[in-house]
Amino acid sequence: MGGSTDVGMGDRNNRPERAMKHDALELRPGQSVELLKELHILTREGRINQDSRRKLKQVYHLYHFIEKLLLELPAGPEHPTLADHGAGKSYLGFILYDLFFRERGTGHIYGVETRPELVESSRTLAARLGFDRMTFLNLSAAEAADATVLPPSLDVVTALHACDTATDDAIAFGLRKHARFMVLVPCCQAEIAGRLRQHKALALSRTPLAELWRHPLHTRELGSQLTNVLRCLYLEASGYQVTVTELVGWEHSLKNELILASFTGQRKRSAAERLRALLAEFGLQALEPVRYPRLEAGELT
Image (cartoon, rainbow, N blue to C red; front, top):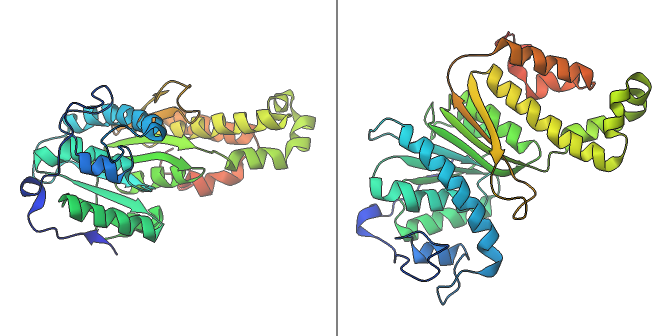
């Protein structure tokens, strides 16, 4: 399903208009004006759309982190390969291509998205701009893991504001594709909060720790925190070095946690043990085969 759109002349002979001096503080030199207008980041007059400043700031910050990872990859006609899970309108993918992939003439970006209308619009825009090393796939993460149109391994897997369990899907996809790097900005972590809420009375009778999620607001906040802690432990147990930092200042976005994972091949037994201990402590053992299947299969212990 899906695939690269044949655009004939390709990147170098079909260059869109480039951004010049207007809004120099926000735009990068040489950016495609046509692309930024299509993404509604620029108005028709070439000014920054006020509603898009915050989104653009987040994407630029994420680009800053991803660019460093891309520069670590070996040179070659097949590198870098990047899959953007839950691509949506592909803001991140298009800007990555425009700023990094276009001039280098190598590598490929895959946008994985379940909404067919967004996939089709992204294909159309890529064709119009001559971004011929972009492929947009109307697939779930599970389907994409087995899709032959994707290479068996990927350099980078990204997921920007993948809602609730979509970040877990992106991690599972990255593990299946032996990703060298994963760049994740989780959003709306609701699954664990829901499970904590269901068993709150039992937990309150069992341990004073349940006071941490007795009030609904705390349930949501603790659920979000615990979700990301478990994800980091799972990545460490799977052979990744993990760094957690802020994407941008909290005044720009409340969904601001950035998880950077670099594959080292050194699986941490202690991380797997602590992940299991946390699941037991919070009564979440039923999540192990669903979200952390490598633990259950004995691959990480």
